[in-house]
Length: 476
Image 1 (tube, rainbow, N blue to C red):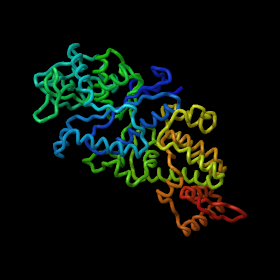
Image 2 (spheres, rainbow, N blue to C red; image 1 turned 180 degrees about the vertical axis):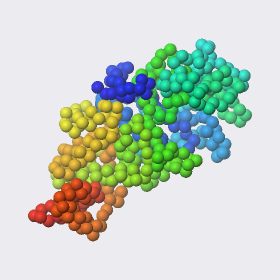
Image 3 (cartoon, one colour; image 1 turned 90 degrees about the horizontal axis):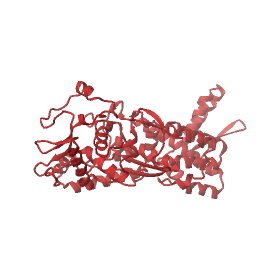
Image 4 (cartoon, rainbow, N blue to C red; image 1 turned 135 degrees about the horizontal axis):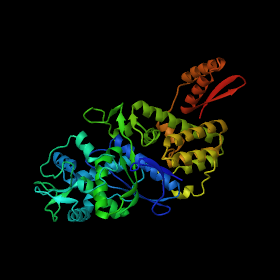
């Protein structure tokens, strides 16, 4: 049984889908006015991994991720660039797809844009007003009255009393309560707008997800996800407006990935520690970024340092080097079979229907991911298999390694291509010096250092062979 931590109940729960064998997931997507940054990459990789594991576990997944293509930031940036809203958003949607495709992130099954669902948003708002959950203010805006929803705060654990005591809230004379939030914004001069029963305007941010999720997945669906920063107020507000509208629970399970910090500080343009994803992709292979992100459990904070990416590159090189070294021992047709085993960023349930999950390594991998997607432990299994390959040169272990790694979006390219692209070279003089150091370590019975030197060379494409008291080396 798969267990998943539910942000709503604050505990791990057995996953029981609404429809047997099927999963409906809604994940909050991008506001498209700028390039994607590393925080966006973490959220996208995390939920891509979750989706892949559901597929490998035999589920049919409907994965919905919205695009916010109208809001204050988009309008401001379009004016600054002397562009239309459509020109700006189309450009950054394209850039987002380019970046995420490189990272091996599967495209959503459905990727609705907010502007396509304005009529349904207006229907929801009209219903909320008629039920007394919302009101049309004197300035033309429509607000949700949070005090009308008795369960407000149940996701974040925040009560309105606590919020008044601990939050600095901007006073707005048009609101009946400082924590009321906007559902419909009255249009200002020269702003894009839609005609409505409330006058010319445009939707607030929170209402778009309620409209799109309900239309595409139904009144109640299995999983709602997003970054931890969205838990309050965005997801809290979604629950309030959706459940007041439908009278049903919005999602059975809520999932949130942890924050991304940069060198122990919150990522911020003002601090100068803001990393644009496509800049990082120029310096590091996409799978290096995936491995770096997935080595940390999705709910934990992730501290980004360039040294962490270098460590991930080193680890990925070890995996690819083990594959390449084993191919040298295998028959040519087996080597080609391994090459064809790479799934090129896609994952199909057919590949895993008859998969031998009783294999000791596969079982350990499965137990890790079934326990709230513990990728840290699952990746540890990959390196256990890698170590076994280096000892046994077993092509069946290579196939197992690639099959399991593909579920995480790793080892999807040929080993030779990765190693060549990442310039994993070492000079002859450096190798000879390391052999001398290793031999001395063996004399000193410092076997931990001896193994460390051997493994580091292996990760750089050099195989050491001990025979008749002498150590020789060759390229993998």
